[in-house]
Image (spheres, rainbow, N blue to C red):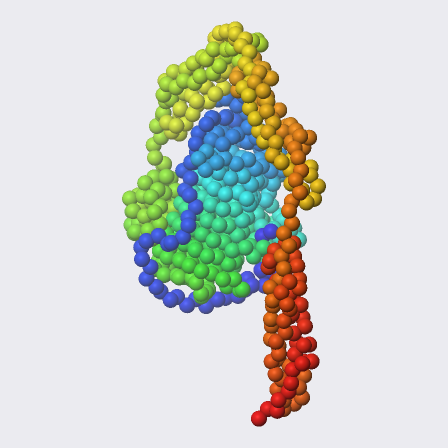
Length: 622
């Protein structure tokens, strides 16, 4: 599934770097990029989840659900599932939730923490496998802290497409002693053959198995190379931007590889900060180890790696339209790239350059005022940064120039007045209920997230309560009985019970007026007549129609003539050409003229050579 033991034999190779600088215009590469989600959703309703909730609750803000899996089973396209602060514990040996249900292109399903980092998904010290196993599409996941899972935080598999992850804090995944025989990687995010993904504003750190220095005895170097921040297996269109990676010491921040030899197409890694990388191997913060087309690695900061910041492994793989530009590297040997591979452009990077972080010791990767990362980078169109603050320029790294560790000040939003209508549906038979308007007054609900979130709470209230309000406050009216009769209709069918060589006649079957009645509607009475017509017209035609013999036409061949050359003369002689013919009217067909002629042609072609050899003559070659 992930890196296997056969990689180990390559790990001691040292590749010479030949940097052929080329000028790149400051426009975005021509390649299809995944959508930036910004929690895109056509909102229909809001569900709520709380560690103090119950799955027997309706999932409202005042009566939330308890578990992630149950909430996910109730979510439909357009829904937003909000998780209150607290710890949500994964169960032993299982995924916390399997997301196989999909939203739509205009109505994503969104799972989000009410407060960024407030909802914690806990694998209970590697007891649970993973927080998310995703095969559904059009899904947003945002704001969670994810920790302590044994295999991964998030797994995404085909046919998933258009999934977006934002504002996640993923850490301490696979942090235990793993047997040598287990060579499966432990990753923050594992993606296999999915399409159109976005990963943005995430903090990913301390991923991977324990090493010998942490008390694990091992005879392999798996702890040096197998575990990664993001693992990309044959993905189409992935955008990784504005993320921070640190302490990725068991592999790399991001690696592409496919054991199924799938090509990764559309790999974009821009405006990320990667610090304190692999201390064991010349591995780099970013590793491309498999055929890749249309990749952009730009405006990133790579610091404190053993040798090279980026590794592209050639092997038998092919690379096309790979651009590595405007990155800052600090540490190692000062070079951006380990390899010299056709299809890779490595240019205009700032090697051996200290990015001047505010406090690397406390993982504060904001930039000092004189940081070289404050310069304009490659034109990626990345207008916001890791804190979702606006970039004054598209600079280098996850943080914008002048960003502080405090995100933009939040504000409180209140819902606007909104109403919904329901029809009283608890009247008895022969009665109809009235339509009743249920109103949520303005300012009943508030949100620190957005105006739409406050309005969604009001909309959820309406969805949940309007029917019960209508049943309690509506009126019932007696429905007067009216009898409706069908109008006359007719239909035709062709008798299809004649034998071979005969054709059936067309028969009209009529449903007379007033044969069927209904107390529902005229359309219902007519529908009964139509059903009779559809069900019985063929039987009526077979019983009442007539059969007529189909006349047969006989076709005769025309005269067919072909020429062949006598080919049984001895050496030094040449044979004469001899015509061979079939007379007209020799062959017949009831199919077509072409069929009769084909029979004559077949006979001539089969016998013309024998005839030429029998009746031709031989001439001495002069």
